[in-house]
Length: 155
Figure (cartoon, rainbow, N blue to C red):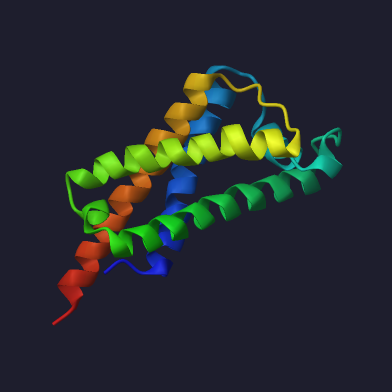
């Protein structure tokens, strides 16, 4: 059985891996922004902060929002995985991770961003790879590991 706390920790870990991907690609490879600028952009998606400068409080808010969203989607995945055993069974878990990552990307890119009036200047491939592979697949495999750990611990 997959528990909600597994989704919380899974979302947190998958959030770290996707954030690392974005930071490596955006900051180290493409030199489009700084680490603080990356997280400040997330906070700038909120309407009161659209034009705010990327200062430390905004960066902290961006980090908090990033991981709040990541853990929230992780908990939702765990709730779905409780009902669909194929979501935590290999090899179908990889397919579910890809699909869920694509759904998360779509919700964030095509629902949340337009609703907040934010501007996305990230290339399409970067958002897709970072969310689908480094969030969705990582999350699904963490749920598989959590289920195996839980199944091995039960009598």
